[in-house]
Image (cartoon, rainbow, N blue to C red; front, side, top):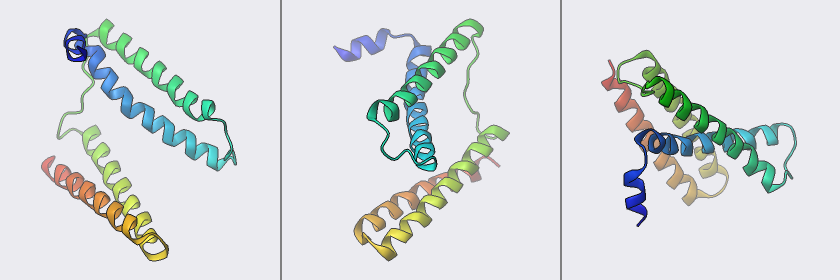
Length: 135
């Protein structure tokens, strides 16, 4: 039943819904980071979840409106400068993630640190491999 509804959904809306998942989690992480930065560690749940939901809704609406009115596709093509910059940022984030998990191995939870370091290393290898393909 759900698959039939997705099949009839407009392609632009479907793509933007999938992109909105990433937008929500990025806005969620930024909200938590800013909350910790400004000392709002006891912020209510509706603030922590509400701000990313509003940001995601606005971004979703703007992208659907823009794509429907202009017909443009917003996809990164392999080999272009924005794609290379995105991959480089991804590689740096993975490297920072690995370094932070090594700290967990040394000072605390060894098993979880090893597990997350392995996931970060796998993501780093995939990112480096993809970056090499763009040359």
